Image (cartoon, rainbow, N blue to C red; front, side, top):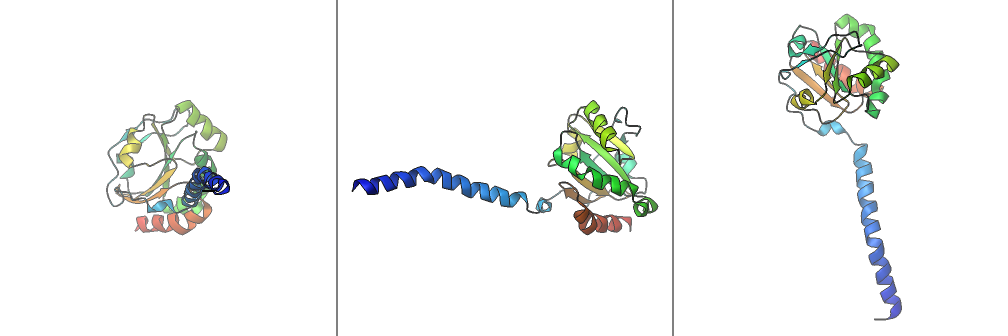
Length: 191
């Protein structure tokens, strides 16, 4: 083999890891924007798990349990944490939903599940951004989140008035997915 073809082979071998990295990075980037709703939820169509969460101190809202989800009102259970950047991004959407007169008239409630967060940090988060929640339960260890099948935060569940989980939204809520996905599921849950 000539010296120049050896150099070309060495260069190609040296570039192979870079090409593999770029291919993987492209794949991950494309999946990042894909629809995370494809992840299955074993709980949809079943009763909410048995749980009882203490209130978040300083939040002026009670904690909640599975019994609170069986009072006849549709409840949105939003799993959040102060350390979660997408939770911060979705928070204005939750605040608008909490103020929505149509949802209020329909009796839809919002419950926050503070997931694996320091209570003081969660309380500060809600003081700074406002609280859309009628009930806030603290899940410091993440045990309730595991029982709910939480993949990560944020996640939002639509729970029928009889305590049955009707829908699960994985990822941050946006105006578009509230309008196109969440509201139709809320309306179905009200029937």
